[in-house]
Image 1 (tube, rainbow, N blue to C red):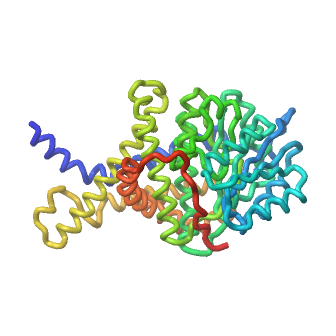
Image 2 (cartoon, one colour; image 1 turned 60 degrees about the horizontal axis):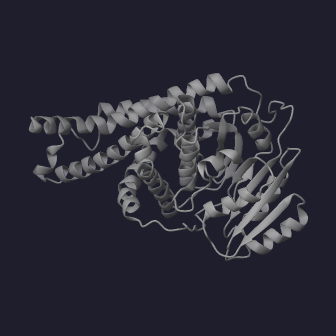
Length: 420
């Protein structure tokens, strides 16, 4: 009996390897279209957010570590947003360049900017906690030190927080460096994959993670969740789960836009995605018992999907290695029956699916991304790169996350931010 089950699993493996991304693509497209037609279609244009009778005061928190090249552009852009009552808190997390001097000079020129200097680098989560505790206002909008806020971002954020059960929103980051192939591929990723994933998760009820580069919270929701944890690899994933476990909703807010810099070297992209993958595995471990004990049944689908994605990554890697070995003449490597390095009808099916995904994303994203047709070529091809990166980073991230000792504070380094 056990032999028959094992034999069935070997036969099913190649179908699962190609079937999982196929199913998920249609799942994301369905959720994205539902979100678009029920929440975005017919909405006011980006530059004309809905009127809110009593706009709440907002605090913008900007953690900075070695941001000498970006701080002035980021903070002057934040200070110029169209909103009647807001403050900016820049937290210098022990920068080793001249970020401190630049921030002090900006504080002298920008009336509503406050600067906090920490003696040493204790991590982004600690810097965010310091900014949140010093903030005067209940709504906190959090951006990275290289992010450029859309002029209407705060007005849209205030509108989304009219729902009293919303504890956090995840905004809509847009790529601003596109001079290289990697940059253009990531434009396609944020349009055709990440945007659809956020929309579908918001439609189906739960968000896996806010975008750390642009998100917003109610201070009381953060307090209920225990604030940002300084011990996590990816504080944004961790805080998203704890806010939802505390009973608050987290929703996708595509109109809360920010323009960001992304890696444009393979090394920089690898380090970024490996950190994201490690953070996901750490979440899987940290929230295992709450999921098992049924503390948050509404989170089980998204947790289960992550477990399936990890299993899928390892099966794809095993299948690829077996296929390569078999093609080199290692006869015993053909134990995964039906696997082909170059898929035939499955390959064509996935290609058509990715084309459909690109067209759906263009329909949705044309509101936010002008010239989307110009990136269509990259949008069509990026899913293949996305899944390959997911496989490699997940396979490496699982043992790293499981074996990594937990530190009191996870410090941070300046990432690769590409070519302007």
